Amino acid sequence: MDTNHQHTHEITISLMSDGSSYKCRFKDKESEIEYLKYVPQSVLTVSPSWTSPGDSVTLTCSVGPPSAGWRFFWYKAVPDMSSTNNYYTFKLLAGGTTGTEQDSYILHGQTHTAGYACRAGRGDPVFYTQYSDVKFVWSGGVNPAASLTVSPHRLQHFSESLSLICEGNSTEWRLKRADEDGRMSSCSYWGEMTGSTCNTNARASSGVYWCESETQSSNAANITIHRESVTLHCRHGDQRKEKNADFYKDKTLIEMDTNHQHTHEITISLMSDGSSYKCRFKDKESEIEYLKCEISYYV
Picture 1 (tube, helix red, strand yellow):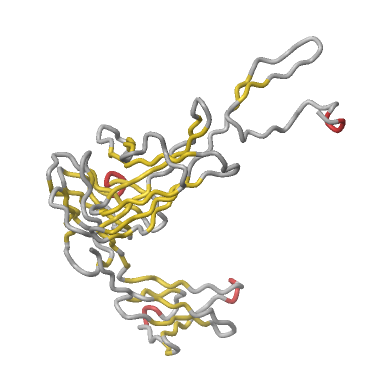
Picture 2 (cartoon, one colour; picture 1 turned 90 degrees about the vertical axis):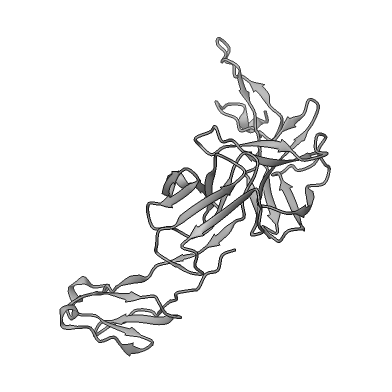
């Protein structure tokens, strides 16, 4: 150690290596050996994430610095139906036993929904990173061996429960959803799976839905759910001045019945193409909020 660290009981070390053993020692006593190993996690991106049958898809795998010397290994994610935690096992893609020097891998002729993962390795013996999170390539194309049907079968859904039906060449299915933030969960978290049908037991939320078995994944459905109504609350910064609030829609005063004259909230319908709203006290008014009910298509 340099002179600045000769009289200390601590040291900071870099774990950007394949692993080493460490111990400390006083004149009369020494510690046990500690083995420290830094195992970085690979990060996978897919492009595009939605495909039509026959499209090519590029998988890109990245590892934190230092990035030199890695070889990249590519896997298809296979659902582990025996797991209650929705785990996947990983099957090397064709020709991937030795890995690739390039950090990208092109899948030609993508036909159906599928999940992928990657990891990197270097050295002899090979030191591997952790597997990446599973990333999906979704397809709305028909797969005779696995299909998802959404009921009610409409172009738009407003705060309603859904029945999601899996059909195909399997006796065991699980229904998955990736929400708008990319978090994946199964029907058991937001519904009840009975046979091959998932019935949502709470209001459905937006996301990509699909069925999967050990051998197949269905077409994916990109479903956006919008609420039928929303309650607007109006609060004055000084609660002592909080009395009656007026609400405006597109700069026009909303006439409320006598039962709602002394209130700071109003429930409005979103079954429209979009409007602007604001509330106003005698001495202060809110910023404008734009609320819109959108039509959502799924494939």
